[in-house]
Length: 515
Image (cartoon, rainbow, N blue to C red; front, top):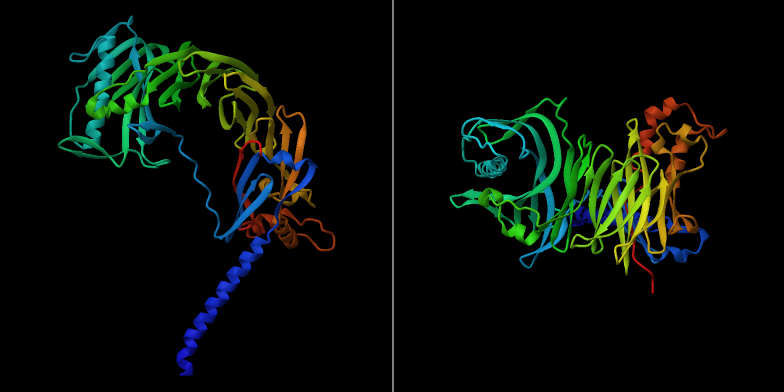
């Protein structure tokens, strides 16, 4: 009888040992150092902000939240997976239901101007208006054959002209669920192409005014495509990409344009999302949605570019540049300009990213200006902070070059950064063969709104230094504490580096004054 119960007893004991080990490890991670050590100023300056993130290795993860100056933590097993980047999309109300809207699959269309000579093969349209209608109809029919799988041969031939303009056809995708990776789900049957699972595709016409000169041949192929042949040394086309935002159920598009070799006009193009949705799929209805309003038009050329458009509170913010001057314009939903401001940068701006904060009576916007790169690794950038009040008035708070932080957020009366600094250790960056392996320290710093004064500074203290000690223990001589040759680091360092504790998924937000 004793032997009969021995195996189950051993299994139970082993399970208890495993559980006890896991509980022990969990308790150790609960005791992991994760705190803010005050260095300068009043900790109350941190209270309007919230910082979240993960500290973990290959086996354990400690998620944390710093809110109202207090640290909360939660231990789990397994490395925290990096959050995939969210798809840029906007909420809208369609037919009384919440939908998510995003841009997808825009297509450039080249059309002749009204006053240019057009030479068309027999059977093809030979006037500007007829060509525009035929190109759209052909696009819709080609899409339908692609969705349905039916075979169709389209009219072929060519159209030649010597002067034209660049336009865009832009698909707009509707989803009932946020951040969907899949595009439109459909079924083709005798009733046509049916959209399924709360997905829908619509299309808009974006009438940019971007002219070009030089002989262009439109080739109409049997599969429904319209190809363009030209001498690219003589025909210079502006590079333009539709970008947009949604505000109060309206889609506002503009053209992110660069390298406009010939002077053109770009504006803001407004579309009603409910009307767009009701128009149906273009491959079924062949309806083309024109903008119901165009405003904010301005010249683009080799120096003056449009960079983007954003919704900031109840207003629209148009972002442009003229070489090293960024031009910001606010508009209301009726298309009236409310304010304009200039931001001077040290270098020409090519693109930007931003983050926003909101408070009663206004918004904060933090821009990071992309300014190209040096070599393959070093990105040039500057950062600007602005505020936009409830009337659309823009206030430029500061612009700083080569910002030292890895995260930052605007507040109503202050500005929070998470700064990364290399630790002062023996050997420094010479000890570690790759610079990104050099041990780091992290500091939370609250600045005045204009970035001139430090209101608070504290260190985000963790036990990551233990990992550094382990690496040095493997590579430093005990007697002299001098680093050994790089040849050892090249071959062996990674077994000491991999799996060590690291910070990930850091997010910083402004929550407002604590009452």
